[in-house]
Image (cartoon, rainbow, N blue to C red):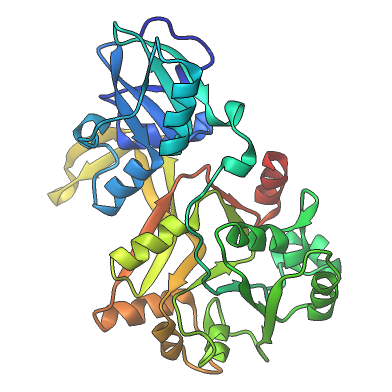
Length: 355
């Protein structure tokens, strides 16, 4: 595409590119929207929402994006549009950035939301006020010696703890009631949270013995009557969780797992064999793509009754139990870059560098 420059060339992707390559380019550009070009001319726009809808529908990661572009009118600006018109279009559509297209179909410029609007205008979307359960009882053994002194939920991320950062993310979408599962160094955790200037509505509940990744939620029977979020205390996800809730409701799920799309490149030639060990195919350094559990979920309240009391019970057990009774377990994907995990030292150091 002619007339490109460094300001926006990283945002342009060819229509023949795959869903996976689009996801990787979004991560590299740190934007959730791309400009699609075909034969050097503007074709359409492709968003993280398009990627998520495609994955949810079971579209293969190697499918070209041109085959799944939405057949709708795409909002763009023309070269002769004045700035007031462009700002109004962006405000109306809540667009991350607006491409300016000339009469020949070339991208002449890109106007970014952050350059022309205040943060206060960033989101006028209807809030949701769902309970949030945070699993904060782990010892954080993989982050020793730091967690020999403080509990894992108090590990610092910038000028806040990881627990505060997680709560703040849910508070931004309207959630106000938090249940925190505690165990290790609970007195330190409570003292810290109780003495913050910003007051959170927190109910602590404590397991007498380790009950697994979801077992302690059995202690909340009779206390939660709506769908609710569950989050571990290891990670942050750059995703508006209202999108996850909408998917959960529309798909009539019992349990929704927030997943991240992760690719692994095998640095060897992979042989496929058949009968008598005869080679049937050869894949040179193939790339495998999977959806990985991030540790964030939405559960319907009836799921609490399926968690046995006082027994070790993991989230995988609950998934299997729901599936065995014919229930619905859905997966909502986010990009690899959108998920920041601090379960071990290398990941934690990456997280604080990014943040």
